[in-house]
Image 1 (cartoon, rainbow, N blue to C red):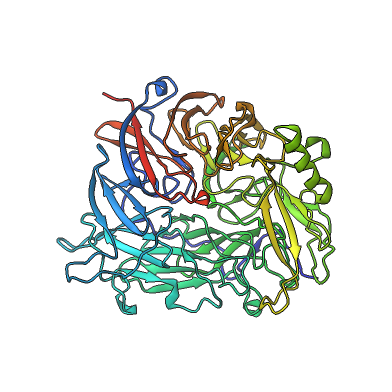
Image 2 (cartoon, rainbow, N blue to C red):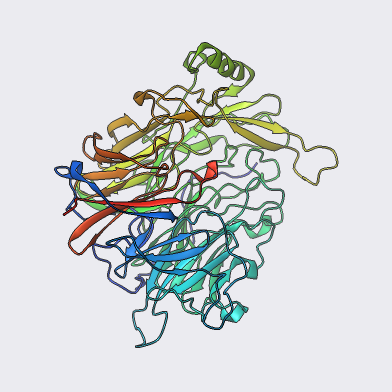
Amino acid sequence: MPTRKSALLCAASVAVTVMFAGAPGYAQTGAEWPSFGGNQLGTQYSTLTQINTKNAANLKRAWTIKAAGSTPIFVNNTLYSCVEGIGIAYDPETGAERWKADPTAPGPDGKPVSPRRGKDRCRTIVYWQSKTPVAGAPCQKRIFWGDESNKFYAADANTGQFCRDFGTAKGHPGYVTHLDYDNLGQGVNRSGTPVIAGDLMVGGLYTSDAGINPADGFVRAFDVRTGEMKWEFDPILPEYRNRAGAGNIWSTLSADAARGLVFIGTTSLSNDYYGGSRTFDDPLSDAVVALSMQTGKVVWSRQLVHHDLWDYDIPSHPMLATITKGGKKLDVVIQHTKQGYVFVFDRATGKDVYPTIEKPVPKTTVPGDVSSPTQPTTAMEYGLTKLNRDDVFGINAEDRAACLKDFDAATNGKFLPTSAEKPNIIYPANGGGSNIGSASYDPQTNLLLVRYRNTADFVELRKPPAGSNNPHAYFGIFRRWVSPLGVPCTPPPWTELAAFDMGTGKRAWTRPWGQMVEAKGKPLLGKEEWGTPWSTSGPVITAGGIAFIGASEDSYFSAVDVKTGKTIWREKQELAPFAVPMTYMHKGKQYVAVAASGWAAMGQTVGDIVAYSLGK
């Protein structure tokens, strides 16, 4: 039986964390928003106060960028975004385009950086600036972004010209790619979201943790100037790399430059719902991992799902906050999860700040698989925790009857493995609970805000068909557990926004979030107290006492009072703002902006970026 450890895994060779002067080359001010989550710590918090609880009701549209991509960052007196493999710079006052960096467009030499670029949604863009700039030289300030063609591009942050020194050694000036290296498997779907760590750009790769022979979930660090790979991290132990793949990082990353640490959250190993081919010890899957910025070696790690049978990947970057507890300021790592728990660890050592409780869970009955007898939990729990037959929802009698038919045909229970004989209703669903960017921390109130869903998946294990090249005895398939009308079969509210007091671990308030407006593409208005069935992302908080959030299919972008959870202001967008917002100050005026591009799962990748301010 595999050994399942939620206890601290620490690299013996790194007993003391080395302090590392690795800031990204510039001093961030409160006016800026230089990366996803606000800065490399990823707290999704801003010190700006011009927009506050007293005047937020007066917000007006400042500008709109049409056919845009990711929520921008703001640094170097410029807004930067990316869409379908293209980096774009905008004026922060008007939203007017300044330049566009298209890798397929001819460069100064008449040749493109790449004959192909990704066509999917670009999640974010990151910025670096030299601490010792060379006067008159290009690319002393750089932006980086990844795409589905498996590339990380680098462009001059002032001009948009590609940095042709980046990736030159590998024969492709202007970008680096994971495909230049052995990924020990197939299906490198795209380059992940990078983070700047000193003079390194650190990024993972996307692969399928449901595939037959997926690539290992490598994270690589590249020199920001040359693109030379400085180190790589594989989450699978060397002796098991021929037996499984994945464990990748599909979400965002964070970094603590002062401590010389990069923080990642990994996925499950392949394949998702059947673990018979991976009954070995895999402590770095479904884990928060602190890597040395200099070497890529593991400093400490905490596995948050043992032998994952539910597709409960770490969904978002480890948040690096300084909380107040017991009258002391503590530098911590906060990790919210799909399975509905908030874990809090000491940032330097990985030890518990709030207790992690190993809870006994049901055993698998699938032949050849060996499940873990316990799973890590905490007292800070959210999301659906149990489901009885009387709880099953339906918008009408016919709809509920269909949901009850599913319920009666299946097993259900939190952390219940799916059997080979019956379907299983898994909750929270594999989209959470919480997901990418779902939480933000406010140091003024010591509150952590978490947006989460109370929905479920309907999962089955099946044997591969005769003649298949699938080596696994079983593979899992899932569907969202919804009625014929497309309404969740779980009881509402389907999405909630909650605040946790980080000094006590207790809830301060909880409210339904969003509203259902359609099902299966047809109008279907739900009650406000039901919340929205489908949501992703979460809020950003400002020192003005406001949480800005979209995260609902009703397409509203809202300002919420952090202390009470009450809505102060909202405005409807053309497409749902399913992205983490940002805020910045320019020429004495505070702006808040968000990408309102709908949901990639619904085939929407391009929409608007909208910005609001208090007007003149």
